[in-house]
Length: 219
Image (tube, one colour):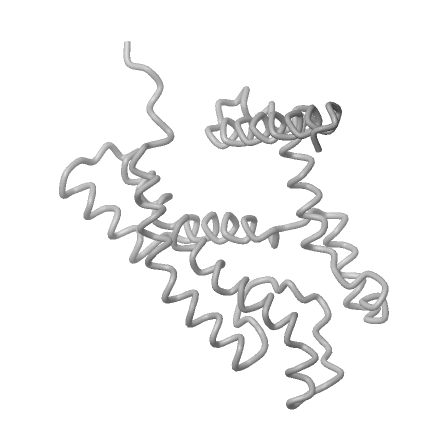
């Protein structure tokens, strides 16, 4: 009897590397654009305080640290996008059980003309790698409230990135094993759940390793 069809393929790894290399020139152009204009052209920003108190050369100097962050984000956002696009396009084509030139043609088609659902998934993955993904309903509500009360930006200037960093830390620690929705996805044989469980277990082993070193006085 035939087993369950594969959901992950080894060809995704070299495709991801190739896509990342293709994304480097795009990332450099995006970073230079931020340097010239001071803001990202699209996507969520690391900077949640949009009002600039200083303009001109003084503003450029004062805003240099945040501009540098935006430049780095823009660069890696483009690289991450191409990495995920090429890997996901390869996965989709392989799942269609194509081979040879038909497989390569289908991968090229998906990369050059990706469907909307593929673009949405790739953008989401790219933003999550930079901790700029959806922070959740509660954090989103706080961010919406900050837009109505700008003075709060001076009290709690950043929400999205710290919340996503916290969620990442919890998800990749022993506490992540208590993520009930993750186990529900695993029981439903969702291939994404296997990735989540692997990340949680690896993160937990690393955390336990550091805890052991601290307990023994080696750190």
